[in-house]
Image 1 (cartoon, rainbow, N blue to C red):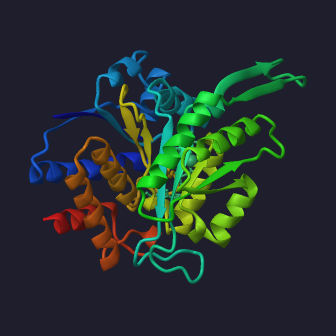
Image 2: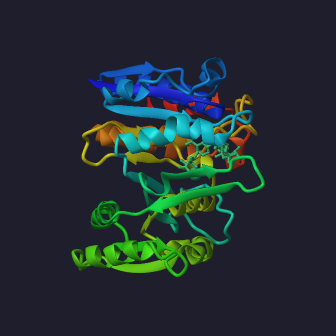
Length: 351
Ligand code: NAD
Ligand code: IPM
Ligand code: MN
């Protein structure tokens, strides 16, 4: 039995989670997996009624689950800082989900905006530090709303925090059947604190003599994600730099609508949270055309984490088959299909 907390959140998050739950229903029956999904109506609608994103004890409630399956959070009428710091970011930190794992693979029949890219030319994974760095909540405002206002927020890098995420990246590189390469991303020419990351990277890399490495500044890495993305294998980056790079990774492999993501606690002493890279997409919310594939592939990552490898493979294969077939694709992939018809096609392919 897997107990999974479901937070659909806002905008297209609601649609793509609804469709994924339909898929899980079929998967559960087909592979005889006993899921217990418990839905929590937290997010911006809850905020507009209660002036908070979730009840005060939401972290205690979530702590009892095996995993959290989340759509997206963000509403055009509420400051993002309120919505994200009221729900998403405390979950990542409190449950020590220090790995944010985001693969970018160019699948067959998906058009990259980069010219002359063939299927699987791009096949990289970004390992983003997810609990500290630039997202640390250290700082504040003084003389607020006056002409003398000062805003300070400090990045926090710890040796332990750098070491565990970099080690995770190297371990993944040893397992992946690709180039056995890890790229480290910093900006330590300008940001002195990042030399701690660089020194830690050097130390950890000595433990993995079979893995080749290089180090790039974030600006150069953004350039190379466009110029020569085929050279990347595993990329390890801080919280903010990993965030930025993974939107690029999603777009060069076709769409944010395909970009899966897991906020993982590798020690499994707290639940991990699975939410795609994309947000609530207000520009297409309510239109019924969001691509549910990112959320479903994120669901496959969750099944991997829960040890349901066969079921996870089945989801990935069905999604890939529908992409390759090309008849039922949402507008982000150049088609005219709806969210629901894509789900129907994927479920049909499973059976
Ligand atoms: P976004 O990812 O929501 O959308 C960016 C673009 O990609 C939009 O044009 C959107 O239509 C498209 N897109 C995204 N997902 C898609 C899908 N599944 N199918 C088809 N097209 C898709 O980013 P944004 O517009 O910068 O942010 C919107 C809101 O979401 C903001 O409030 C932001 O803070 C929030 N956000 C939340 C999360 C999260 O909850 N994990 C992640 C990113 C952004
Ligand atoms: C993501 C999002 C979040 C992040 C925002 C919404 C706080 O962009 O998951 O990529 O920056 O981590
Ligand atoms: Mn992001």
